[in-house]
Length: 265
Image (cartoon, rainbow, N blue to C red; front, side):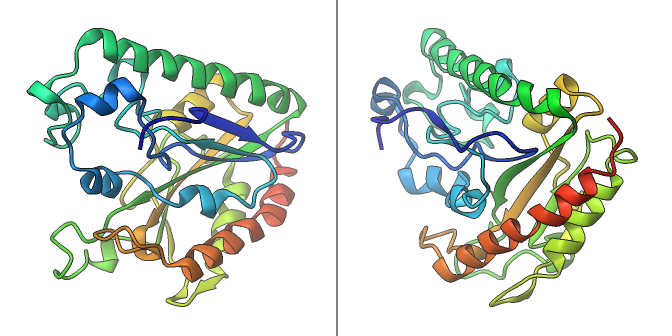
């Protein structure tokens, strides 16, 4: 899908202390890149984070990225944000000739600059009011061995992986604990939501950026939802599960904000 809408949207009042993002939900690609792309669209879709914008979309203030991570990966730093060669993206051949030229790559990096500049403009006033929480919503595959193969073991693959690798864990312990307890208390059709910390992922660039720009004030929770809410091989969503996860995430807001009030400015 070529890009015929903004690369990202900031929706809501941004007048509270809780924001949600879905920076890998997008599938759009600008036209000049789409003409050079040789990666099958279904493979690309499988490596993106489809429908995470729906899971995070009930928060009052949300950031949705509509461009594909294969145009620019906003969860990597500027220099690593473009998958110029197969070595940059799990061995996948994305471009004609296997390499994206530097001019095209730099245009994508400028989008990275623009995103973080706009994010700062929205978050700076929030941080000026005091500590805040950002839900950094992603998803991950658990059927890598094929559509008919057994899924990855549950022991190593929680339904929701909570990444806190760059967080001041001691300072924000009340927030992390409140979030985990509130989300774990909810269920989907599969049963109680299994939330565990730093099992598969610890958070990446967006979380680090928040913690470095807003030390002691920003609390980014990197949330990786296992793709039990969709068929990761056909791309078909399980709408009931998506709605249940969205409602469950929405229900964490009140206890998380109450816990945030315990964090001293």
